[in-house]
Image 1 (tube, rainbow, N blue to C red):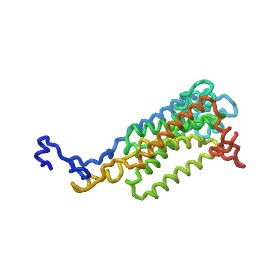
Image 2: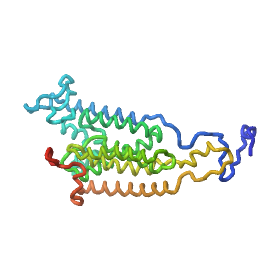
Image 3: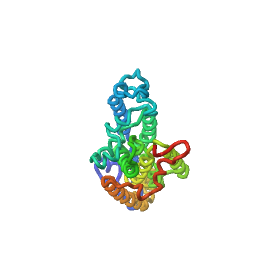
Length: 326
C-alpha cells in the first residue's frame, strides 16, 4: 500500500478488489447538498404571471353587466378581482385566463395551440388557488431540490405539468383548466418513487410510505369536488412517479457507507442494485409510450370518455348539492 509520502508525491493508491479504499476523499458520492434556486424561480414566475394576468384582466373596465358590476377590492384599481359570482377564488375572468394561455381543448385541437399544454401550468384561477399551490411548491420542491439538484427537479416539474395537461385534454372538453397542480402532484409522485427505488437507505420505511400515500390520497379525494381538475392531479402524479424512478435513483446503502468502514474491509462493487435498474427500465418505457400515445390522442381529437364511461367520476362526483355538468 502506498504511504502518505507516496500520495503527496503523486503516487497512486492501489485498490484491492472487494475491499474498502482508504478515505482520501470521504464525501459520499451522490450526496451533494444543492442550494435550491429553480424552485424559487418557479415560485416567482407563478406570482409574476398572476400579477400580469390581473393587470390584463382590469375588472373595473371589462365588467359591464349591472348585476355583476361590483369588482372585489376595487381599491386595487385594475388589479381588483372579478365579482365573486364569476370567480369565488379572488381572481380574473375565464376570458382573461383563456387569453393568457389556459388549457382549452378546442383551441389545442382545432386551432393548433399546443403551447397551451405548457402555458396553463403557470396560470392560476385566483389568489386562494395561487397561495395553496405555492405553499406546496415551497415545502415539497425545496426539499427535493436540495437533495437532487435543479436539473432533475426542474424536469420533473415541467414534464409532470405536461402529463397532467395531456390527461386533462383527453377527458375535459367543456371547461378551461389552469394551475400548477399537475406539476406539484408530480413532485409528490417523485417523492414516493424515490423512496421506493432508494429503499435500502431509509429507516422507518413503512411510516414514510404511509405518510406520502395519505397526503396524495387526501388531495386526490378533494379533487372529486366540482371546479377542481382531478385529471391534472392524476396525470401529474403518474408522470412524476415514473420520472422519479428514472432520474432520482441513488447508490444503495452498502455503497454509500463504504467510506465509513475500516480500510481493507470487504464491500460490494455494485453501485446500484438490480431492482433499481429494472424499475428504471420499466418506468422509462412507460413514460415514452405514455407521452407518445397521449399526445397523439390529444392532437387527433380523441375523447377518452368514449372508452371509459366511468372515468369522469374521478374528477367530479355529482351530489344533491352540485351538478358536475354545470
